[in-house]
Image (cartoon, rainbow, N blue to C red):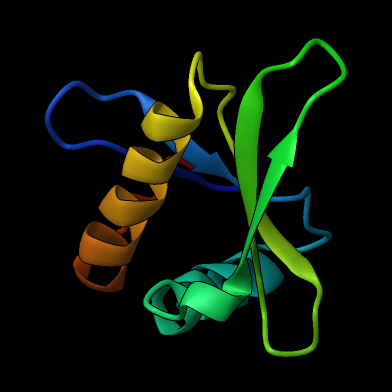
Amino acid sequence: MFNLKSSGNGEVVLTSELYTSKQNAEGGILSVKANAQHDARYQKLTARDGSPYFTLTATNGQVIGVSEMYSTTRARDDGIAWVKANAPSATTVDQT
């Protein structure tokens, strides 16, 4: 799995699924980078407790990342804007 973290405060903004291999996780990272700038790839959702969050999907509709839970829809939308701006150029730190 992988996490996309804010370089400012180190908070996890997006978390991937669990992968069966490191190679598949690396493919997921490339998919996040490729899909992050496309508005249509984001699903704005609400958890059972009312917390807004979002998912990022690949072109085939598969979820490639789930956000943290936010306190407001504005904060969620700011999270999406951050991913769009930062994910394509994010550096990868391998912690295996």
